[in-house]
Every structure is written in structure tokens, then in C-alpha cells.
Image 1: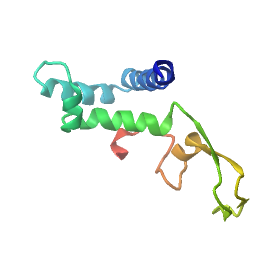
Image 2: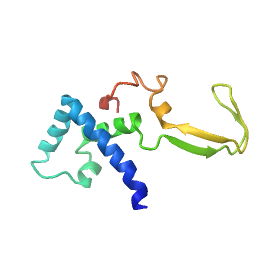
Image 3: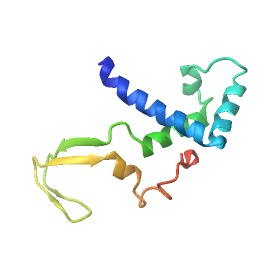
Length: 119
């Protein structure tokens, strides 16, 4: 279980750090939230109590755009027709792509842009 959670956490943490380093305005937004804590390190309670809303939006945006698990395999429980018109039968193997979902322009305005404020 330790190893299973390690890659996904490390992957998301790396993407978050990359965006903080690349975009000065993102770094400033996070720094402002940390300064508001009065110089103490942030805690999980700070997250729960909503004291780090911008930081949370940065994490959500990186999960939208760079999900550490990009394919979810599933078996169809019943027959259906997808919006694309493709037929799915009970027992068919289906792959759900978080990469495609996170970049779908019908769902996300300007999906290629990294924009924490969309959350």
C-alpha cells in the first residue's frame, strides 16, 4: 500500500512544484496564503478549515491537467450507447481517460491553460 500511494503523490507534488517554479503569480498566491498563517507551517487542519483556498485550487488544477493515473479500466455493467454513438455491450472492457477528460474543451474553457482560478 505504501508503494501504491507513493508514485501518485510524488507525481502530483512534482507537477505542483513545477508550476510554482514556472509561474511567478502562482508562487506569489501560495506565498500570500502562507504569510497569512503568521509564519507557522501549514497543517491539514488549515486545509480542512479553508485557510489555503488558492493552494487547493493549484492542486486541483494540476490533478485536472496531469492526473497521476491516466487510465481507469472498467467493465460495462449493461448495454448502452455513448454520446458519440458507439455501442457498449454488457461485459465490454472500457478505458476511461483522465487525460482526455481533463482536456475536453466541451467541459473546460481553454483546457490547455494551467489556470487554478477555474476552481
